[in-house]
Length: 487
Image (cartoon, rainbow, N blue to C red; front, side, top):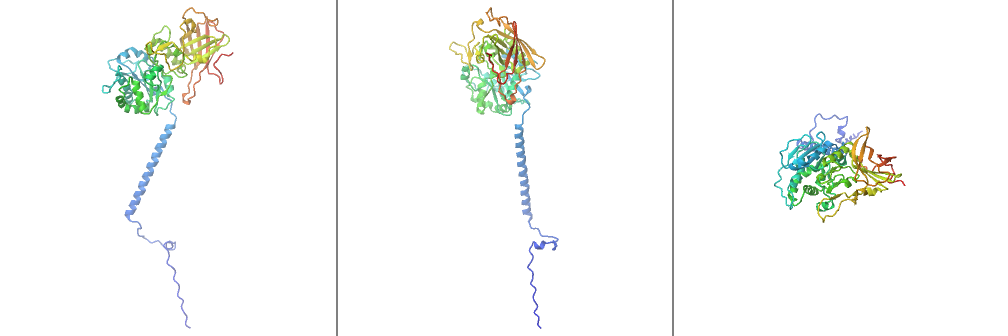
């Protein structure tokens, strides 16, 4: 029997994956699948990718850290963060250095005096003096003006270029500018010195602002430039001095160059150019609700207090400010409804006692005790504030009590004593005719500028009864309290 042998069907070939099954051993040596050149290019691409990632990450972290640092609150600005530059000539410095000595402290105030020429002996009670650089290459074409305006303007650049460390603010003024340094520190603490700030005020005299600019900080009243802006201004100031040869003063040149940098003036009402003459009583008795920062043109005004010279009168004002800087010249008004008496207290300076009920807005208006800065029959009394007439007859004015002494009460407050300034044999109401002295007690005024709270005038109470002496207590007003006479 023939048997037919069935042919065995062969299995299909294994795929590459099947050939790598556990049952199949790996070959001991496999041929390279990538050429060396391709491998090197691949490795180079990986290396470049890692570098790019690291660079991007570090840049992001640096920007992020810088952003966080800018957003963090700064520790408070202090006196040592301010650098004062005083513009003077050798001749004027000999006459006016006594003013600077009143506010400058060698231990806590940083300042430099820029003179037109040297030859003066050092004085440890005054700032060090340097001679300004030569400015003869800069043009000056204002008819009848003074070329010294260029030298004074360039004080800004010369100050910044010194490279003094830890300066947050550059402050500029004249040798007849008196600064209330602690108040200036308080005002500048509102602003970030790492940003561009130009802080000051214009003139009290309307015509001066028309002539120069309403948006310019008048240099005699002083102005401050943040450190970051000062560095930028110093780089470009010389080019501005070439362009603005036709301008009169140094402050106009600084203002114009800052305008080209795109920076506008930030007005602070505590800077005082004092473009008026004569008796400053009316201006000082109605100071804005802001810290007193500076006073200027002291040689053109009368002494602030009776029987004193100019230096002595400023020293008395600064002495009071040393005990309560924020409160100096701040006005509080209190009423005695039983005797119908109104009392206006200008702390650290003077008190006026009015017979009758005087409304607060009337007492906040400046009494025109001064004359215009510009002289001449055609000059009008145009000021940047409202004024009221000051009676020529001394007996038509309220009795005035000037600061006589001031001291600490031993806690967190002060006492100040004001003595009557007699002006003649005037008939006064029974309630005040024997009054000779007024004593004022007040807590130290603390301004929380970092929270930028709006200022509020403080209230005061008159202790009754009074005969030859009156006692007044200044305090914070209650929430809905009105400064008015109770009727």
